[in-house]
Image 1: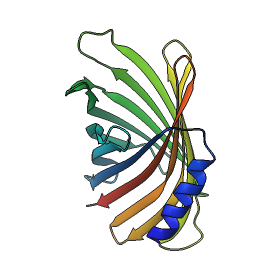
Image 2: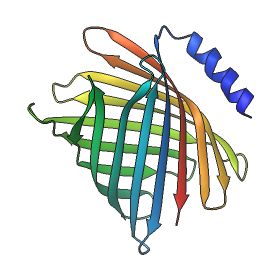
Image 3: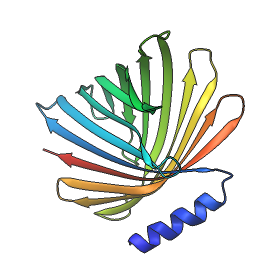
Length: 202
């Protein structure tokens, strides 16, 4: 399995004109409080092979309220630490999320972020992530998703395309996959990422 994922990662990344390579590790823990309420905690690190350091890490905590089988709304608090120079710069990002899902496996997440950075102007950003999770097998299913980032100047500033597999082991699941991140400033720059997303339900 690991050899297959590595070969697939190299094949896809060579098709992209990108000069940056990273590996991301995410752990999300979810606990159910009632039929409608649940809490989520998340931590993530991003290692950059070019700079040979942890370029970024964050932690996130929040609560989600279910409005039925298909709809949900969540309020979260996130602290982000980005590497700059010899230190890490902290930014705070509270966000309001809306969730919609269908029995077929199609899901949409709409995230509204308010970004607070010290000594800079605060900003708003919208993130829309549609995705599809297959239900072919009981504990092993491919998925695909794409997330667009829209800055408050109504400009597409980032796009993330992600494809991988979900492997379920009881209350624990792991989602290894390839992620292509495209960032736009004066021009588009691409980053090839091996992303391992892990989830635990309590």
